[in-house]
Every structure is written in structure tokens, then in C-alpha cells.
Length: 187
Image 1: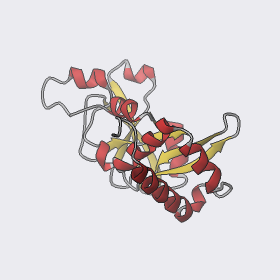
Image 2 (image 1 turned 45 degrees about the vertical axis):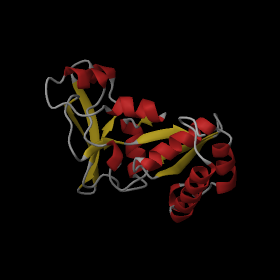
Image 3 (image 1 turned 60 degrees about the vertical axis):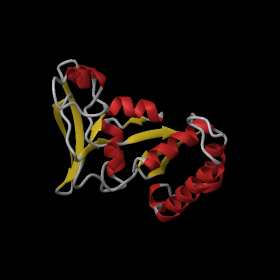
Image 4 (image 1 turned 90 degrees about the vertical axis):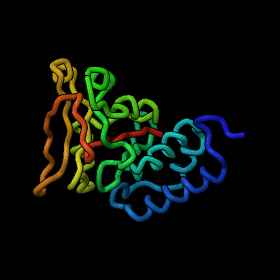
């Protein structure tokens, strides 16, 4: 019997096969990295493996975009061309969700990220990802919002239009069919 947050051998093998194929296809995202040590680190951490599975299951198409030598961690980010389909039509956080009086979305970006075990990209991380892109040409992604903006009821999001990254603001309780969020996982 498979426990919650635990994958079957078949799911693990399929995920690793998918991640490896993406790693090979998009080598420009990680030109100096080799797959074998990354795969070993993934397999050594059941929780991170499950988080990667959830990133993939919800449409994020996670891929390695870097390596942090100080922490000895590989950095995975959602690299789907558009914001992940399985994480759209959600407001920014729990407070925004609870503040809505009617037409509440099913969930919030912060809550979903916490459930998956990932962090939402901040503005700097999003801009870095766009250097490997372009991403979000038809959609947009909530970004980790500075507390000073969030305290005033807002939240920020980004997209890529006209050959440029744009960062905007909206009420944190808003939600749209083409807005989701991109996550990051350190393995």
C-alpha cells in the first residue's frame, strides 16, 4: 500500500524518465551540469521526489536551472511555457481567499505551494527564469509579494509581453483563468 506523499516505483521511474528527457532537451538551462548526480540527489530524498512529482502532475514541467555550491542543492523551477494549468484560477494567499465574500476560488497560490512543498518565485527569480524563456506569453504568474505590498491588500504577478518582462500588481483576492504561479524546489 502506498502512503500519502509516497510514490510507487512506477511513478518514480516515469518521473525520472520525464525529468531526464527534459534535462537533455533544454540543456541551455543548465549547460555545466550532469544528470547523474542530480538524479542521485532526487532519489535520496523522498519528500523532494514527491514535490517534483506534484510539480509535474500540476503542469509545471520542472527543470533544473542552476546549482547552489554553498548549499550543494540543485534548483528546479516550473518551466512550462505558460503558468501551470493545474495551479490556475487561485488568489494569492489564505487571507485573500477568506476575505472574498462571494465567488471564492478553490484555493490560494501560497497554500498550494505549501501543500506541494515548493516556494513561489519572487520577482528576481522570475526575471532570471525569463532569461531562459520566454515564459507566460499568454498567461501570468503570481510572485512572492513583499510584505509592504501585501499589508495594503495587493500582490504582484509577472508575465512576458512584447519581448519584455512585466511585473504588475492586483488585489491579492483576485483570480483569473490564466493566472497561476511558478514554483521552485531545491534538491
